[in-house]
Length: 189
Image 1 (cartoon, rainbow, N blue to C red):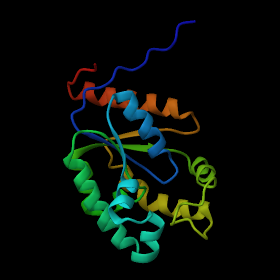
Image 2: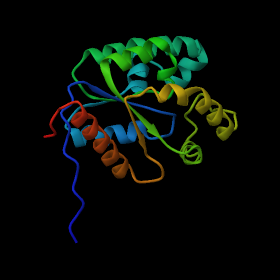
Image 3: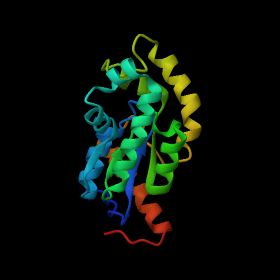
Image 4: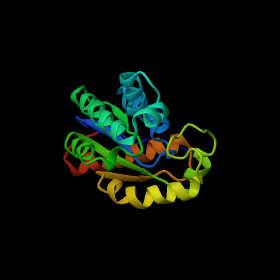
C-alpha cells in the first residue's frame, strides 16, 4: 500500500514560533518540527532559565510573574534577532503585549491547539508547572484558556494537534506552513 505523500518543506525566511497552552506539546513538537525543517530548535523557557540562572518555578516564586514576563520578552527579542529557527514559547508569552507584538512582527506564529481534557491529561504527568502547583489543573487551565485563547487566535496559523502522535502533529504543522507559503507565493523545497 503506498504511503501518504509527505508535505514538502516550505521556504519560510523567519522564525516559526509555536504558541499555545502549557502541555499542548510546543517543546516536543517543536524539536521534531525543527528536525523535519532542518532548522535549529530553541525553547524559550530553557533560554529564560539559562539567562536567569534559575528555573521557571524559582523565577515565579522569588521574583513573581511580572518579572518572569519581562525576562521572557527580553529573551524572545534576542532569539528573534538570530537566524530563523523553530521557537517553542512559554504558554503565557502571548499575554504580554510587547512579546505578542514582537512575535507577530518578526516570526510566523503557529497556535498548537488541543482539547482542554487532552491538555489536562498531559500536564498531570509532571508537577513542573508553577501556575498549576497546588491547584485544580482543569479549573486552572480552563481559566487560562478563557483569557489566552483569544490571544492565541491572533497567530498566523492554527493547527489542531488533538490526541494524535507527535509525528502527526509535526506533519499537520508542516502542511499548514506549506499552505501559508503557497498563499505567500513561496515554493516548497
